Length: 344
Ligand SMILES: [Zn+2]
Ligand SMILES: [Zn+2]
Image (cartoon, rainbow, N blue to C red; front, side, top):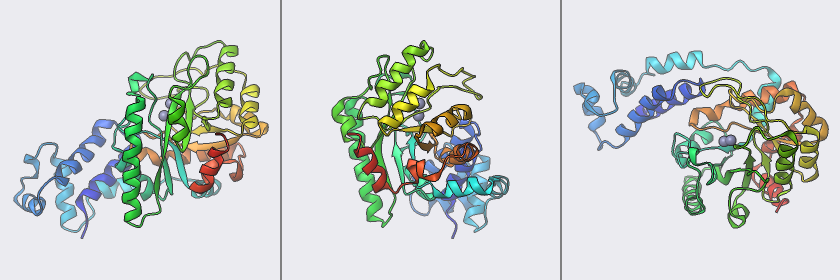
């Protein structure tokens, strides 16, 4: 028996991975969500009566996929996607990708992501991750619905419940708690010390005053890296090289001082895998490598399919000669947490 809802979600995943427009992906995720709510037996009844399309959010294409799937066939739409979705990775990139055990930067619909926490988690587990660090935005990033201290506290309970559910199903996968906290103008972090202390992993990123003078930006980043709560410095230049949001120049800072601070405090520099970011540029990645930095190869996923973008970061790390033992997300969860605890 094929599961038509799993097929619809797989289609959405592949479309997201390919960077398709959100509305096309929503058609499939939306239809899956609608159909999941039907009483037992109604899906099959509607499929044979041809009335699936009468349901809100179910269109021609999604209805056809469901009918094919219920008949035990792989939907044609899915088959076409699967056959064109192969990633041509060279051997070294594939080996690095296989060595990664999780992803330390991902968003849910609690901030500006498009999917609920459980869907992000199940997608991460399905691609073989042992853990996913949930890093929704912090309060001052209001455009991205940053989480107040209250909402983040609430999220921690939700994550604990989800993890209990995964354990109950015998899954070894778990969600690690986290945040993508804004590095404020003075280098301080945009969340309470109490909460930052409770989180498993803290990614800190600059999202404001990106055009600070180099001296100011350097001081900001060095201050943030010295903060015991911060574990990973996210997308350090803030550049945008392509995509719907247009392009943005790199923030200017003294990379030698910033990377030396990361080494001094044993923090990691993120290698951000989003196609429009690919941050840091290889030139800076090499400087960080020579400085002796650790790295975290992350997707910064805002939708389940984007969790598969780690290969972008791996390809760049391989090109710059980053060894596996410098990459924190090659560590099992327990060792990753032991590392973040050394900062507290
Ligand atoms: Zn960010
Ligand atoms: Zn992010």
